[in-house]
Image 1 (cartoon, rainbow, N blue to C red):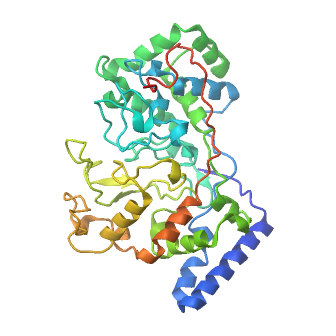
Image 2 (cartoon, rainbow, N blue to C red):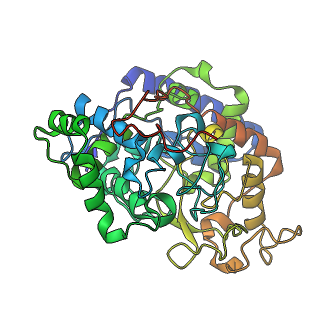
Image 3 (tube, rainbow, N blue to C red):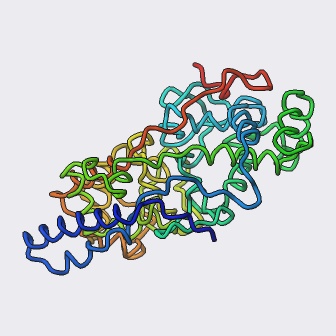
Length: 402
């Protein structure tokens, strides 16, 4: 387990603590609720700013050459079975390194984001790649890059492991013309005949050997450069009180008080655990996605939400208002129906929904403030540069031009 050094000067931490305590004492006195102050006073132990530099795996040193190779591979459709899909097809900077679709369109798709068309759907919403370097980070800045949960079901435990799995998916990148067992060998053969890639592997790893392990390490190195860790919230928690509005501060207050931070905690606003929420199925899929079998999915980060709609594991909710309404539904008890046609997945009984969700103290009066606070978690200043070309000579990013 690595611990990222604290970068906030002690005096600034004291300043922030004093501001928070003063504000919440005022709210406490106003609301005559001593327990309220007790739960909020230690807010920095619940939600915290991201560190200002990135954790790196001991087994995968980041170098400019490796990052450059990873970026080329990320944008090159040569890694896909039909040479038509790149990692960037569904994780594009113009879409917050997601794809703006409820369910991603991989193999055979044409176009970018909302304009992308195709008959083959992935069964889940594309997670953003931004800040995945921090996946698994705790509130005291401890993080293990070799045990960092990835995907909606936590099936990969590092960026290196994550980088290869979409290549094997027949819906996402592999297609059906190459078997799963033959795909990696095919990719190695393809890269070996491209002199520019041979040279890039030489510069990145010391020899020109091409392997899927090296492909994964290069892509993971590039993905660790996609960082957005200077949101208004981060600046506020580091001591700049002017970066968040009063409404956003009130929203932060409510976010913790109603129970959102029970799961959306830490610097990434995620506990990285699987929770059963009963999210309605996406009607585009033939069957409701049950995850690992019990309809449990990982708590997503709340950072950069303004760039990554729609939301939930199947993109079922198109706005943050819809998300908030959903949580109000499941915390209201009853049979899981909001009175508007069934807002809860009928395969998930109310008593199987995670108690942390059922115990939320949702209130329409604070919804707007909580959404305003989540907007303070946005940082648009991540790398958005796109290569002019890739070594294969194929279209950069795959078939993303309509």
